[in-house]
Length: 456
Image (cartoon, rainbow, N blue to C red; front, side, top):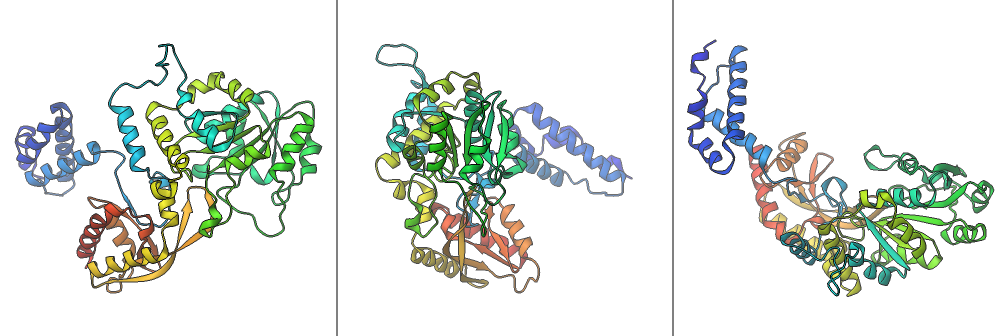
């Protein structure tokens, strides 16, 4: 063991690479990295690793600084073909939406101020008129996410009471969160009726009693039960609720404002349909098929929305000014009839197969040897339209001469300066142009060339 060769803290601080860090970051935090690195070097020397090169230490410090202090979350290129990829942040936003967010961030805004008379107003007036116009609802309220919307609705309407829901809809969603566990936090008691695969209106009716606070229907947005099934439709549930004077809440999940059958997909229930059917409250997300920021959107009867807006939880769950600006800009795309051309989610859904094939072939030509194009399928993802797919064309990165190394290649792509996220099938790396934004193409191809060069 030769500890005498380990560089001193001062010598590393004077290294050009570390001096560059000191020009950008506070001396104290850089100094801590240097000390930690030297400690690690000392431990390595102690177990027989004699590497204590100052250049290596300085480069390792620079790399750690980049990991610790670089922009977060890191931007990635989604080449998976999953349009609403939850792990990648779900819906990308339109350019108009991003501009609206920037404006709201860069200065002060009339968030809760009535410019007409200088009195205090409500932030909800920023989106309430748009949501009412698009859904036909009497009133609207927006919180920070859809789970929060459900929690607020039940806490307002059914605390200390029973909420009736189909057993087939009381499921687990992403990240291990179970719908019953979320609902119980509202203070309501959950009463599940029917069976996993078949629930009738008579099951709901039989469970009604003086303690019933609400009838709840949850759209199965991230799974599908097929075969011997029966689902109670929302119209029948509304009629039962009216006859018993019990409010009906419809959790739609995805928040789809466009008819999905026009793209060859199954029909996705829409908020405007629920409102038209007479539900008391319809709840949905902002960052799924709506194509906007994370938000929980509530539309429905004004009397109930007003009660919810006054509940203490409304303050805890309220949406911030930047998300409100983003949601407003996204909703305006629908009001103007330009969602297909402006909202990235719908641009991707409606992208013609011939255009995707042309992009995939262009990629293959530009990359050359080791690539080909094949047919494939894109998915909606994000708990929307389960099992529904769209035909696509995929760029295939061959690992023929690198047997079993497809996972190594995807790792290289993920860990690059500009991370690219693809998928692996049958020891082939596949990249789907559908979910790659046009301005990302050159960056993606450069990343692929570099990753394949390292593995060749």
